[in-house]
Image (cartoon, rainbow, N blue to C red):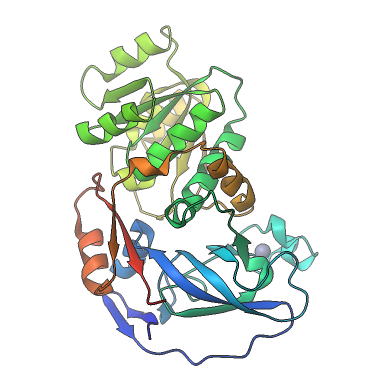
Length: 339
Ligand SMILES: [Zn+2]
């Protein structure tokens, strides 16, 4: 039996959870796969602001083993995504019955117990049924697609607009793919040739190294205008100044990803260019859209190598993830729980 509780920074302990009965409107889900994410690694390292103890694991899929009462579209034996965020219950939107517009959603593994455990009992609205065409691996990446879609909405740019994506890693790659699906033109910037190679493999036309010829390359790709927007992927660990440098005057820059890492944005350059800064740190409210985008292959998840761990030591996995100096283009590591 698995239930990996983060007791403190750097200390995960496997303690069997007490099963509680399924109440009216709730479902019981047997967890099948959990993605070992950079976000979980940040929580593990102690930087993520988790309230210990909490079961770790933000991204997971499973199968419904039990339902109770009216569960609106969720039935026993359905394959489901466990939603990585839930409405907080405390903000004005939540208190006025508009939980779907929650201002600060609670995050799995940080604000409520995550999913690296055998069973989860939760409200039926906290799971999303998965169509057959969306694989378990696709579904584990649905939150990244949701973030990408939220970024697109936030940018609200006309077709053909040039958008710099700083970071060609996992999240950056998916953001670029979704931008392209929406007929925007992503320009991926990274200092890792392998990540750039992978974005080119996804059909992304513009990808540049973060070197001294970057500005010249950007000017060429944008008819001398620089980009209409810039998106900084937080797990890229690239220089955030690239975000301001790549965007034209008076435009929007978005910080996007999962992990709330501290870094400095050059305020003078930001002010000189009159750039508006915004952030998208979750895909709350966009899960159904993300699943639909995956059905329509708006983002090709198969480009990422993956490693399915049937026997695992989460302490070692998260330690390695949190210690990697830069989020290089590693494999997706997926914990397979005993079914
Ligand atoms: Zn709320």
